[in-house]
Amino acid sequence: MSMINLFPESFNIIDLTHTINETTSVWDGSCGFSSELIDDYKNFGFRAQKYTMRSCLGTHLDSPAHCNEGSTDCASIKIENCIVQTYVIDLTSKAHEDYCISVDDIQQFENSYEKIKEGSLVFFSTGWAKRWNDPILFRNVKDDGIPHFPFVSPDVAKLLLDRNVVGIGIDTFSPDPIISDAPVHRLLLGAGKYIIESVANLENMPPINSYAIALPLKISGAVESPIRLIGLVSK
Ligand SMILES: [Zn+2]
Image (cartoon, rainbow, N blue to C red):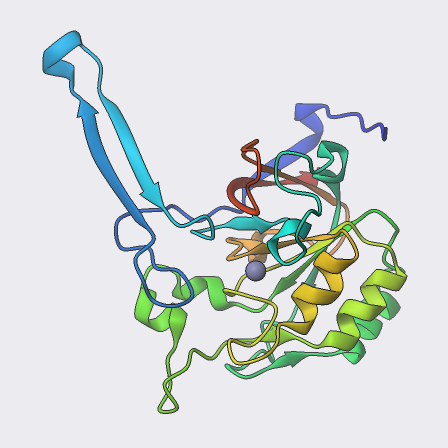
């Protein structure tokens, strides 16, 4: 068990979560969410709803079980791995729609700040979150019929496994390109790490000196789960 002292007066709190609504799409373009009224105020004074949604909707976490049968799911993920020190690697000045985040980018970050610590969560800030409110712009399907967005090189995943991080997060749909065999997913989830996708507001986070709270719903067998992702920035 790890120990952290969380004094609210010592942190600025940043919401790193996108709002989900009826227009929110998932990576394949299908709309992932609908809300149905089960009861309303006029009956017993309470409104109740039933949600139908894809498990990969909005800001969400992929557990190791997402691509490894029998591996850790969202209910069994260790919560001490979900409240952790974070790093935010800012790539907004160079991350074009086919940008591959490279080992060089990580080394430049480590040279400027510090070596990425064991047990931390590494976020990639590409600027893509600014497109979130326009699902067409966020998916960015080009003439070849597939979505294009910045992604992560498998060598970066290997380097971060060397650093023994708990996981990574990115502000696009995925750290892997849509047309690929998802090497970054396979490497990280295969090693028991997690991946957070469609992260919001990373531009408000500093490169170092912050924490994140990334808690998936405790649904038995859930391989992915929407999360309310919170950044805590030391004052
Ligand atoms: Zn994923």
